Amino acid sequence: MKKLVLVCLAVFGVLVGCKSANTEPSEVTNFIVIFTDDLGYGDVGVYGAEGYETPYLDAMANDGMRFTDFSVSSSICTPSRAGLLTGRYAQRWNHDNGVFWPHSKDGMPASEITIAEMLKEKGYKTGMVGKWHLGHQPEFLPTAQGFNMYYGIPYSNDMWRDPEMPLAEDVVFNEGFTVKDYKSSIQKNKLKSKVPLMLGNKVVKWPVDQSVLTRKYTDKAKQFILENKEEPFFLYMAHSMPHIPLYASKDFAGKTKRGLFGDVIQEIDWSVGEILKTLKAQGLDKNTMVIFTSDNGPWVKKRPNAGSAGVFRDGKFSSYEGGSRVPCIVWQPGTVPSGAVSNEQTSTLDILPTIANIAGASVPKDRTIDGLNITEVFKGNTYTKLDRPYFLYRGDGIRIGDWKYVKDKDSEQLFNLSTDKEESKNLMEQYPDKAQELIDSLESVRLKLN
Image (cartoon, rainbow, N blue to C red):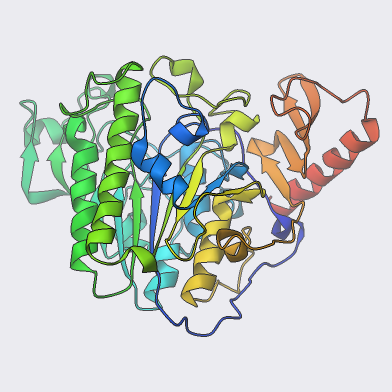
């Protein structure tokens, strides 16, 4: 999750406070965003995955739209999640691409406006299931950021517990631990990957059994849908995996040729299938938009317990395409054309303004929104392509159109992605003017993002 931030024209001073010109929609649309952790571009069947199958995601793509040039706002966890939920780069609130830890006292500021807060103003019920990682102190948790319901882990599944986090009265302790252990100063290396499960703003299990976490998330997500089916709803479902350590339930463990990684992906695929089946059974499929994507590319150094970026270079913590380009599938029968493929340069930053347009909500006008309203793309209509700049992690580079400049350690590199998706041919010497153009743009972006 550490190297690639995308920046759009708003970074250059265009206030994309694009309040929808739409009036009230004729039929209210529900929204579900399914966000995986460290899932690479090549980790879904329709994107070329091997060694396991993803029949539900493949069917979702067949019945909806698959994106080939969809990127995240950062190739590291915390800022990527912030970008998704706010439509803004985390640098706008002075967060420079690190992640929050169990000892962190800060989080995403309350002044940031999330999709959940925006939709609550339109009468939506809002729920968050899964990994948060935008601050675990009470004032930063989902319940303080617009969500009516929260059930999940507060940060990455390889972390530990903060002994100051409040416990529910009926908290369950596992693995022989007690409340004394929870509040003690046990060395963190002895508690690594022993993360708490939260309901609302309190811990209900510690440590949670991660082998059943995907199932627990799925059950809670289905429950939220059923409880709110008579009202418009927004569900943000953020899976904890395939971030390492990997865990799969007994029904999926040992079932694929790709080992535990493949087992984990097949269980996530099953989970997606359960969500779509629930929508269909309740007659909600035609008025619910489901978006499936990932927070960044694969953690390639952790193979074989990590995924694949397909043909793209590198992965998480990288300014190369493998770090930021991720799979994305959008599904809504009757609205999103079936079997469609979009090659538009799109981003998680676009989700907030697009949802706002569809829901008839107002995008915040008092701040710069870095995403664009791409509703027409979701409908399969012609879209005027804008070669907006994509700012790369910690100022390491920038992409404008097919041209990309990257400063990696001691070298400077220029690539043309239209002819070199693998980023294997450095064109700095052949195109010095183009390189300088991108360098100048990068400096301008840095100034505007502080």
